[in-house]
Image (cartoon, rainbow, N blue to C red; front, side, top):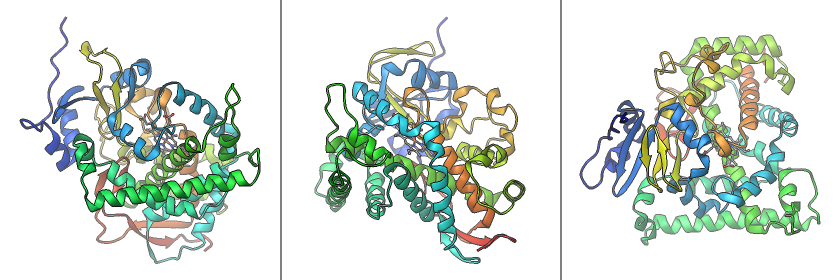
Length: 448
Ligand code: HEM
């Protein structure tokens, strides 16, 4: 039997869907997903398919993973991130993943729990009742400190400048117009010159940071990830050069802080909009912790806290879009696709599909109680992706999100500041277009 024809996305002659996309990527993708489980899109001369059936998503990410590589948008990030774990492919990626994986073993991550809570408590000691803060910046700075301390074994002041540089560069690299029309990036525009200058500064800081550690002795001291990278040897005895170490440091720093900062920021925004959920969260924290800072041992008892994080990442997945390009022809849903096909899997739309989520637009942490997750298809929820390229930091991130949420929410209730506009901005990650200012109210009984 012939499979049904693949429907097409809204578009115009010549440009295809490029203008529709540019006007609002999330709205465009929602409209496209409503047209079918597999929808054809065209952006100028490039064709792409939106894949929304969780079984098809599983096929692309897991079962047929060997027939795909990261798509051109991610490959573009190589200009910034080089051959780091997020962007590299093939045998090189496999070797690096094997090498870095031990830093993320369950036992190893358990040791980071204390660092996470200590840094958060230090941040909270500077918060004052009745003030309004830029919460997203506070979360970015906190998670940058934590990942630097946990993975690189040090508090590096320069890492804040690294974070600022990355912010500038990622915003520009995330603009699909520069990928679809690459000549734009080569024009002598002030924005292009600024891009190059910031990229050079970033490179210099990270290389300086590596040189400092190398200068402290050989083999590199410490049991952190940086020492592991510097000391690792191939079977032939060769070591990673500075360029490879630089690429991995940048990727882990970038991937390791902005996503978690966003997950927490969206969570506090959602709690502010949903006072019943906030009340239930506070009740759980008071009952389990009774005013003391959380530890890793509390995690199993902080059940609702975990559901709050899961539900927040459902509605506002920090990694809102995943893309792959096929390296050979393949079959999906009864259709044949050529080598070079772009396949897009969009957690933003999949997580809002009423087939899997009752009242999908409502924030309902309690939906995750009991066996709910087992009752939906595996790839109906994919905040961390899946298959061989699944997020290496997923357990680190879940632990960090739950511990930070518990530590902060125990001491402060946060309310979105009056007049704050909330508009999601789908860059590489799902950001806040107008920032997130929140008012702090110290909770009764909490110590300042
Ligand atoms: C809430 C927080 C996080 C979210 C939502 C998230 C999401 C993701 C997703 C969806 C991918 C797969 C991308 C793809 O398949 O194209 C990914 C990959 C990756 N993530 Fe995360 N991540 C988070 C936190 C972290 C943390 C804390 C670290 C490190 C400390 C990290 C490091 C990485 C790396 C290195 C990769 C590339 C892995 C590979 O291709 O081998 N992430 N992340």
